[in-house]
Image (tube, rainbow, N blue to C red):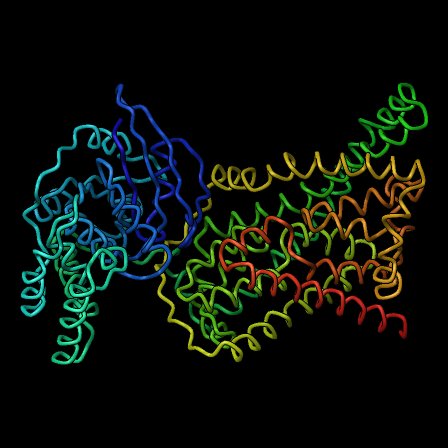
Length: 639
């Protein structure tokens, strides 16, 4: 078996290339930071088994961010037979620097020039000359069009490692330090020169292998360089690498003589404040209106189709086979099926289609640049906008996506905002499908205004409490392109399938349990102890506590369970309008939009931030949700 490792900078198209090479789907988005964990798969090419590891995107092998440490540790443990460095051919310099680092360490490198279909519209790239300069295999590819994928796999099969003649030349003082450290820097599988450079950059995965005396020697060199040159040695190393990358880029890539395209002009307009802000408001407005109109139409359509096709057949079957209890159980199943269909397709699936279009088009990074200054007031930078947008789909990948933010402090601020003030698609369905439909669109708009205010309140308070300046924004800008219908459809299904696989069976089981409890008069034993919350504080029917409880397991189950509870307490199909008043639907929407994170979110918070921070976020969200719901109940009672 041939073992291949993929590394590349964020947004170089590494995940897209992985999918093209192996046929295994990972979420592919036109912005940085999608891959946050290892992905691996095996493909057979010409009788050869090739096992491919896709590592998280990283700007460097020298830094101390989570991704950089993870990638460097993975390479230190096992480099594999081939390391494919995925470069963005339309933005060569940054990718070249990462390639230099991999070559310096003596890794068996193949350079994959991705996005050649896009780069060819702007540049003439001399791939042959690049091969000669770097003295490694260089393969032009396009993950979008599948250009060069077979050539890349064939190169992997035929690859034979040899020492390259190319070396980055550093400042003479740095070169002297490198030579002094060659004896110290012997690590199996790595070139001593590359290890020496990593020691000077204070790479933790390599520095940890030294004795205290050797570490002191490295620290002495770094301090001496900073004292004599007035800047840190790792900054100077990076400058030398980028200088060399610029020289190579100029040698192998020339701009094509052509006029700027409409896409490029639109990109400029999207990032200039004078035109970008109105454009952003327009995009958000169109998204919001489209969501309202289309989701309402789909919900009514699906409900009417299900009624005409299924009718009362499930209930009749239950009554025939199980009598009164069978009728109750199959009635619950009937309501569960209707609830999940009218919840997932009109609201959750529709949102993921819209998000997929915005992702694939390349518009989101432009919104990031536009919002950078505003985000700084919250102790964040513009890059925080992307995890927030992902959070509207699901909080779990959104919290993982916060890894694109440099500091743990910023990640904690951003994750708290995501949990408490960014409604996931299930919460969005509650706001629009319950509050918006039964209390009016103005009530849903009030909830969105409240959540918008909470974003700023949480960010400003945590920024003042956790004193530290936010890091600067550094993001590559992908081209604006026409979204791929295939990619949008794939991502939509991949993100929605858990709702059918996990939530649907749970809803059916939950409805059966509720029916049995109701049939034997045992439901009051569950509902009564919490009535001081539902009735006294929130002014809701006591049985709504069931929806709150299952909402901790999965948020989409809260609305599904609300449908079921309404059906159990009404002779109508759902009986939602008669189950609660418009004011109660508003209070319910307020509480659920801030409410305690579901178990999946709780687990990922625990993994990323530890139990103490997780407990603080979870309990704070629960307390704020109940206080906000109580306040709205009191205000609405007075009005």
